[in-house]
Length: 163
Image (cartoon, rainbow, N blue to C red):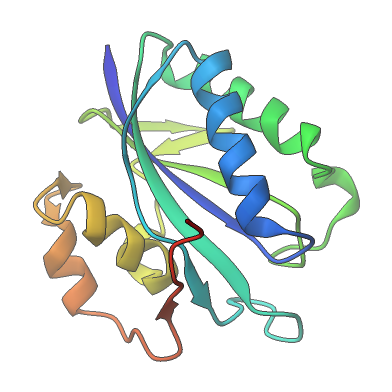
């Protein structure tokens, strides 16, 4: 079984409800087990700043799927929640964005998938929820909590639990 860290994000629609449903879909379609789920965080938009704030979270799952099969599942889940990659602008608004952050200690560079995620340590909106569930995980030679300490977390707020 592979241990996988996945980042979730979105800023269109009821993102928190989408997360709940998407996590169930990911685990079901990937025949995976949810190991941990972070809180949800309101975060400023990144890249294209002229849009609504995002909500971000991270999950840790175990799955028997290989990284490419899991990527296929994640893209199918995004589509189920209304994401059409070919019709969106880069870093623009979206209902659901799923990024595979790390798959065990796999290092991979393919046109459709790079592991670990190449911009992980530039993105506080991923590192904050990731540090909540895996602060001591070493990814690409860097401990998550150390990576978080090197970026600004300004504007990121933990949201109250939905109950």
